[in-house]
Image (cartoon, rainbow over all chains, first blue to last red; front, top):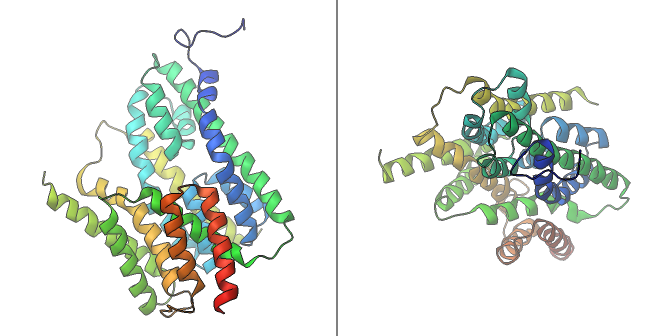
Length: 236
Length: 106
């Protein structure tokens, strides 16, 4: 290679990798936090690493360690992950038209790296890249950069977490604090009613129904009622 | 590594990868609209409510208001996050306040 090729002329894997830097930097502190909390909540270094490698979905992973900690069953955790990550199907649906000629290996590979963040970046970047072959390489670069950061910094965090000698009672609140901050950054006028409804239903169900089933029940009902309400508001 | 944890990872992987890969494999040119789309979009915020609020209001299985460090640490963390929307700072704040209130109220 003779120096930098102009990005307008040839955008490929390296360009995607370079674009992924912002996500990689953004993932680092969250992944370190995940590694520390996972090990503080009883997972081993290997378990935290495996989860980041295979599951690779930030919010679901935090929720899973909270649910494991609360004693939820495997099926409950699986089901919760499924309904939470149905949104990735929407993102995948909207990225797929960039690759009308895709082959099976490319489909399997490109789908692996689709997260909230890589979806946003890919949607923005891919529309300025000509040629499907180039777009595949750019997306692979973006996805791989983000994934590498998530995995590597999880490992770093779990090493830190397993070396931390302190027994600090504040740790049991760490995940709740994280969810509260996520809540405050995701609440909008359009979803506040669903949030309040889910909160109320969850408290009532938790008091009267044994086990962790209250999570799925309240989420399914609240999201269902919220969606039904939106449809009523704007018919069509 | 316990078998139960392996099962958890397996199911979670099927759920996340399945949602990501199915459109790549099956897409025919139509987008999801209407009730299903709204439902999927509302699930994350509903799940945040279901995970957090019961833990704050009923940490030990019954409604507890006054001597409940979870509740007050939660309220303060909500307020903090409103003004400082930073993940790391918020976690540090929440843990610190919980630790203090836990000492104070019990």
